[in-house]
Length: 125
Image 1 (spheres, one colour):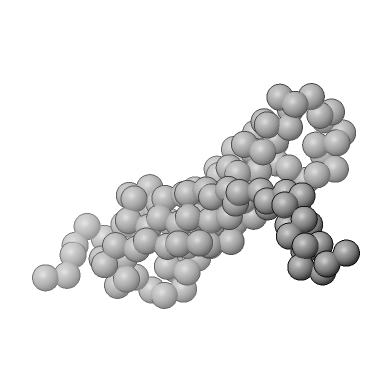
Image 2: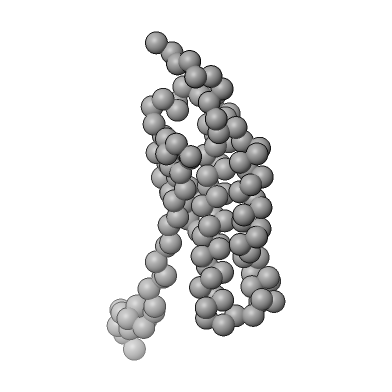
C-alpha cells in the first residue's frame, strides 16, 4: 500500500482532540482576571494599571489564588457532568474532583487568608 495514502486514511479515521475548556476567575473588584485551563494553568491574565502598583509578591499571590479558584470551579463543573452521566461517588472520589463542600470551604479559607480590602482609603496623587 502507498505510504502517503496510508497517512491520509489514518488522519481521516483519527478523532480530533477534545476542545480545551477555559475557565475564568476575577478578583472581587474585577481589577484582576485570569483565564485558565481546567487544571488552573493560566491562558490569559488581565490586570488593571492601578493593580500594578501593588507589591509584586501580593499581586502574584492574588493571580495564583484566582488560578486555583478557576481550577476548583472547573473541577466542580466536571464533577456535575460526570454525576449527571451516572458515575458513582466512588469513581468521582478516585478522580480527585472536588465536592461542592470542599470548594466552598477552600473559598472561605482564601477569603480569610488573603486581604481583599484596601489597606488605606488614601490614594496617591
